[in-house]
Image (cartoon, rainbow over all chains, first blue to last red):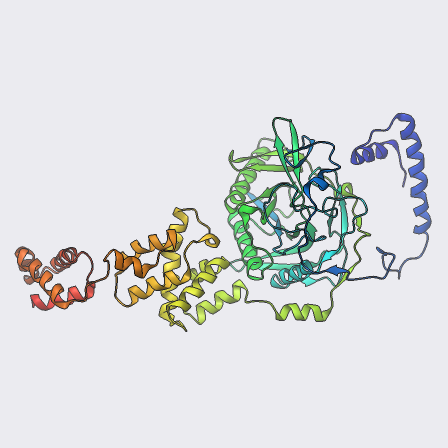
Length: 95
Length: 478
């Protein structure tokens, strides 16, 4: 797979960041090298290997359906850059 | 050209568990903003989500009730996107291994709408626009409330079928105690995927998706309007764009929200915080054994055991609140109820109860009266204490405020007279005052009797049993 500036621009949009031309060039190069590591994996025969999603063999870690007290609203809003009426005030997004 | 509509639904249902899917905050609807929130559902770094076991149970119940295959090895995936109703910037969902696959729901026509999958995920928060700050207010109380997303195949071909599919799913989810199915509180909402194509064509047209439609009526209206919009577009030489649209039910039209993301834009990957969930054969057997009677089975039983007609059973079993009312009412009339008691309870519910419910826009789960009050009223009619017309008037009071029918009848002196002498006196007076009708009857005019019955009932203020009055009149005229 070839990483070019079109793909990087596309990723910028998805990640909500804006790169300068110099950064984009460097990023294209870096991503190309990262992707090429996976070519090495492609070369390995994985016919009988199950896809791995977790590194540990733990399964079925669950909790009972019980309600515990939530956090105080002030504590939850502590990190809000702006707040109003006990809500996080964010950039207008309602369509 | 003739067109046909192809519809697939994504039905989201909030589960009626006590706590959220990955933390112990309450799932209670409403509440002051940001009072049902903790570091897990607020998406704070370092917080560890732990799966609520009850969510898996209910997902399996929903799957078994819809003839799905249950996935043994389940995983959760992160669906990444930026939107302020989602504080983690990803939703925990299931992309690769949804818990249930390949099921169906059967419509009354016998047509099966196939289900592609049912998967578990978390709900997002609620955003409201603040016109003063020209900003949005984010309330995360709903964040992390467990959801099942039920995805159908594009097997639906009109608004009626779509509505019926949602109704069937809703009843199944209620019966199995998976969800309360309250559409007005957002516990059940549907996304409609729709495309049109020339009639008979095998290839699918370009589809649009209308999101979060939360009433059956709106689903039907949205489908009709969108099919028409797409056909007009194609007829006038245009093409349908694949996009997400918002249905505005007040305006009766939809408008484009954003172009549809591809799945790859969500950068799905397995959630490393949540270990896989293995469901064993024993788990599935245990859940299957604990399943309650489902709508279809109940309908069959009502028809064969209680002798109710198909139309009545369809209506009765479509809503769990109606089922509960029906069964409790019949049982309160007499225990065990006779077939006539069942029929009478069913007639009342499908007649007066639903009529007043629709007049007052009251949902069955919010009825104010108890089954015992309705049963008392049925017993009053059964024992000839009041007649049907009076009973209907009394029921208005029962429906509005759970008024005790016995007390009401006594207080307003509505009970029928059982005094044979009083009835005879009234009837004789009517005969004396209506010589013309008496003559007509005797000369063979049968309708004259109806008039005399009417006059007699009027004289008795409707408080005498009509068959008795009729019999007495016939005897006196002989």
